Length: 358
Image 1 (cartoon, helix red, strand yellow):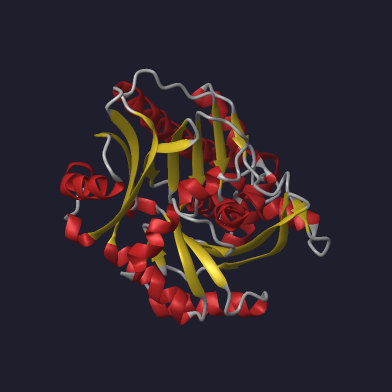
Image 2 (tube, helix red, strand yellow; image 1 turned 90 degrees about the vertical axis):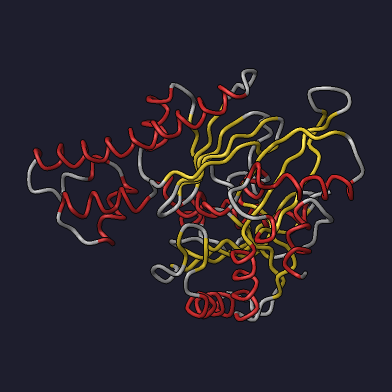
């Protein structure tokens, strides 16, 4: 089937393509090429996603989303282009498992029989892919990274891209897309904070081994400010990104500022608590695992002082990850604008980097 072949390209031959990231808050596109041996950002675009068009990583309003995507592509020179898209959210299942050494055909069949052990869906309703990431517990075993997603989630994505007049040439997964944009750190954690959900992924030896979705994202911080300060969404977004010291001009009193800051800190503490539980859960099952670095990216990561607050609670270094920081940039871009949107472009840029891999 067409969609299954696309999914199998995760570990297959890389193709030049525009990176397409469809999130619940916005739709992003990026075009990256190699120039003098270095990644070069040629074009980039983003647009707010229609409300409730994407929920829990699944497309809920296909026609509405296709229309938005078509407009974004046409306005920014991407119309009719070849794109690589990503899967994420609660419908994406990633597991690292041990299997006996066997041929690829035999392993695919063995995994199909065992899928229900790892994924709470019938194998008949899933697309899956896998690849070997290293040696297993014994010489007779290998470590296999298994990725599975409900068929309807993938098929819906294929239909939307086609309706938008674009050619879908590959489907990837969000953790692998982000990993291409990271520094060379073998064992780390990535928090991809979106509008509604934060996806936490643990990497061991450069491979994603565990992922979990936490229902806390940028919207929770925005709505806390809207309610506490009695301001609109647009003003709340500005305050959120500028920092706590700018609460005072929009709050009626210093007491109101303290109350709202306290509410924000409680949301941060809740997020940090869930992140810590995720790490502890995985470490209980894999006692030799250690995490030395934490990267936070995505639109929700842009809230002022969020990395510092998380670092203090987790007692781990937390770095705001900007995928554009060490990349050559076309001179037509406004650098100040790029600094503002960089963290939320990680998936789209990582998808575009597929074609830059050797």
